[in-house]
Image 1 (spheres, helix red, strand yellow):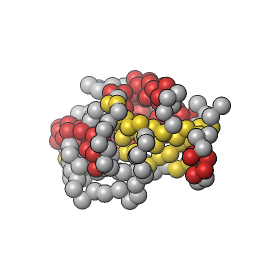
Image 2 (cartoon, rainbow, N blue to C red):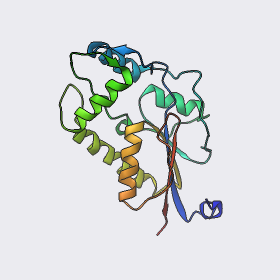
Image 3 (cartoon, rainbow, N blue to C red):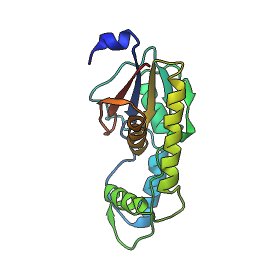
Image 4 (cartoon, one colour):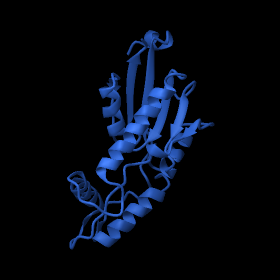
Length: 194
């Protein structure tokens, strides 16, 4: 990456950082009722103290945006963010769906199965996939608006939300420079100034 380009402010930069691993992110065998509780616990979880970024990016001189969920706020704090510029409700994770099904699976297998059912339109007491994508488009619109005033924006968010935000930004002319969707993963996008 040519740092001179960034330093000359001829590009805008967006950094999407996925939160660290939640302490509740175990992978036990559970039934559907236990999985529903797993989802609730995941949404309220603190970070696993043994979870650390493989790499870090600087957040100095950046406009810092966080999801309202605790794990994203704690991840920003771990990075040393002393001031959060904006808490963006639309940046929260796409709801993790859960369905009442008559079998036992490992927690993360439930996530995969439930997401697959959700993608094809199965409904439940959570936002639909269509509504979630529309919400993520609002995140992209907010990023575009923030880029009118800020050269570098760092967002502490979530796996699925970051994935669809990245797709939306690329569709709007942003160039992908780096991507990692794992816990603590960093995705970087650039957009040349007009």
